[in-house]
Image (tube, rainbow, N blue to C red; front, side, top):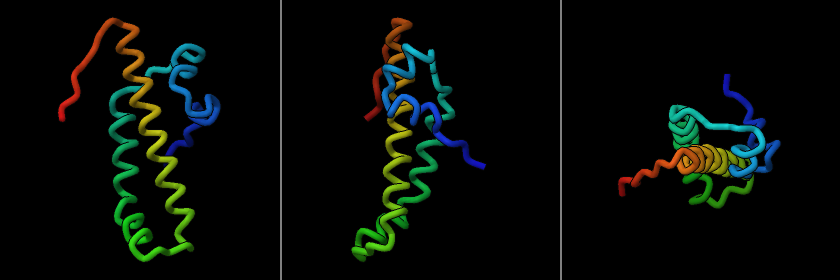
Length: 92
């Protein structure tokens, strides 16, 4: 059963608040799972967009929230690394 992104909602999606107020540092596997969750919905999203299907607006909004949660976790992790004095280079 998937978890609700409660901290994401409490902080209104602010990774700065999540780190400084709550001390939140997500494990790397949370970022991976968030990405997998979003990617699993992309076929439906692409079909809805191609067919201009307004009945699929809920699925589009669900995908959008998954995208924001993934970026929230990624930003929280990056900020925690900067706080520790570590930086990493992204693979392109």
